[in-house]
Image (cartoon, rainbow, N blue to C red; front, side):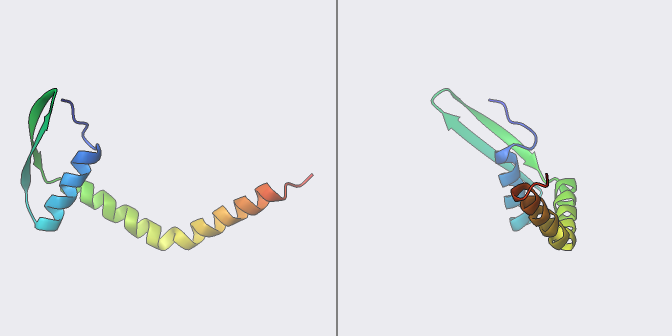
Length: 80
């Protein structure tokens, strides 16, 4: 079984480790086609990036909303 670095299971496990304050986690998956055991380590760089995006969105959400609204209005009323 393959697992991408930032695939959905990886992000979910990162979230659980952040919430519960764990530095590592084992994840075992079983299917009819086989099983796999992964060891995840907490990725502090991932959370630093998430925090930066959250701060960016908080400070720029109003400007982004205004730009999107202007684009919607422009697409509804194209000038000749």
